[in-house]
Amino acid sequence: MLQPKLPGNKCGNRQSLERDGGAEREERRQRGGGREDKGWMNNAFAKGRKQHAAGGGNLQRGKDSFGEGLPPHLEVGSRDLRLSLSLSLSLFFKSLCSLFSLLLPLLQLGRGWGRGRLVRGSRLGLQSWPAAGGARGCLSSVPRSVGECSCVLWSCIITLHNNYAEKMGEEANDDKKPTTKFELERETELRFEVEASQSVQLELLAGMAEIFGTELTRNKKFTFDAGAKVAVFTWHGCSLQLSGRTEVAYVSKDTPMLLYLNTHTALEQMRRQAEKEEERGPRVMVVGPTDVGKSTVCRLLLNYAVRLGRRPTYVELDVGQGSVSIPGTMGALYIERPADVEEGFSIQAPLVYHFGSTTPGTNIKLYNKITSRLADVFNQRCEVNRRASVSGCVINTCGWVKGSGYQALVHAASAFEVDVVVVLDQERLYNELKRDLPHFVRTVLLPKSGGVVERSKDFRRECRDERIREYFYGFRGCFYPHAFNVKFSDVKIYKVGAPTIPDSCLPLGMSQEDNQLKLVPVTPGRDMVHHLLSVSTAEGTEENLSETSVAGFIVVTSVDLEHQVFTVLSPAPRPLPKNFLLIMDIRFMDLK
Image 1 (tube, rainbow, N blue to C red):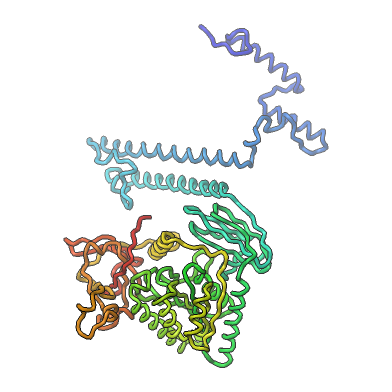
Image 2 (cartoon, one colour):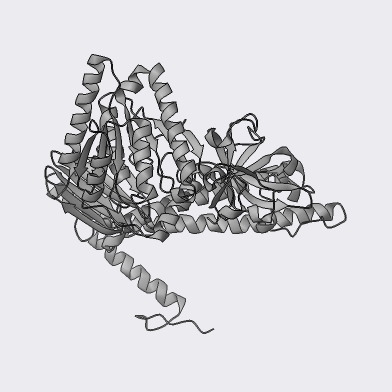
């Protein structure tokens, strides 16, 4: 019989191999002090003991010590070893999943043979299982104990694999993210913008810092999603760390924060004077063109006031990029705690009114009417709540500052009886307001921050869609909205404002302005799909629906004319709290 020849041996028969192996063992036994070497580990431990004895008790690592020949990337505790183990475990879980997917049909097949027939669904794979409760349906022909145990085992394997893969994926992604450390001097700020489809983590390592008036917690990571534009300011200096990809990140010494702080100090002095004299506190209105940082200044003033124990009211008159509710609304919010660094102000119980569009110009009369209504409600609250009266309010406005937009600003200042008007980055608007407002109204001109970025129309539209999505699904998808059908006969849908028609076609004595506040009934149809609907709190049509607050919002996802129902997406389960709905011009398509 031919034997395979091995290198280093003259012949390939078994006797020669045994003879050579015996000679080698005898030679090693003589070198090792008469003991037979049973492996490289014994030899290593023996030499390690010799080195330990020779070195006075300190175990030193020599060439023949434990681990000789191991490359550095496989040393115990190294990161590559962890990755190798994680890959092995991942493959192990996948193998278990594959094995179990093969065993499950065999269990069903065996049960069918035992009954003399092939069970229905014995070839069902994982893809055929229903989403909920489907495992028992697929295993209806399998004994209960086998089926349930199989499902439990399968669920455990899948859960372990997914959790482990997700955890290792997060660690790998965190390690791949570029990390940059910044050392900020006193009265400087770090400005950064997050890239599209990316996220950035910010961590305060040392010192003190704040974001728009909210203090940062040390050694806590804050996550900012794609499109975020953030400025981290420090009064005394700090050390920051950014992890992730940013479009731009730089430290600036040119910042108007000192001017904003002086404005807050002046407002706080007015509040203290109001407490002593038992009068109402300051009412501040922030105005300016688009993209000058009006919302940021409002958030800053509110956070500084709350940190001193005040309870101001935030009034949102920006129907396009508001932060109290979804776009197309106007509202007010009682501020009791500083805004969250990531989520903003807590909007548990805001007062919201339906406007229906993202620009005031579509119905300026309705816009002014809702402004007056908000002012009346705020005055009523100040009469019964002394703390709210002393704290005052901060009013955010739209960026429309010419023509009818300017007249809307003057109307808002008159309705709320403002004491201070802060004008950002437009001297012309400052002089016009100083001329047209009463002399007792203090008008202040402040510069905009250098970190303010001009937003495109597409970016504004994406921000509006994200705001609506956050209403239904929560911040970063923590909520689960409800979908249900609503009968045409159960609700009444209206639109505020009739279409514009020529003056010659109007009835005698009627003007176009009267048409802007008219309630027009809407018949449900396919053109209503993807439109937002406001659920009014009105009890009947005799109430003015345009001046009544709303309880919430729903979006129409489909309309069935045959069965006279339409399907809605709602943040709360059925039924709707009221049956009066106001339709918006805004559409929302849930594509994510």
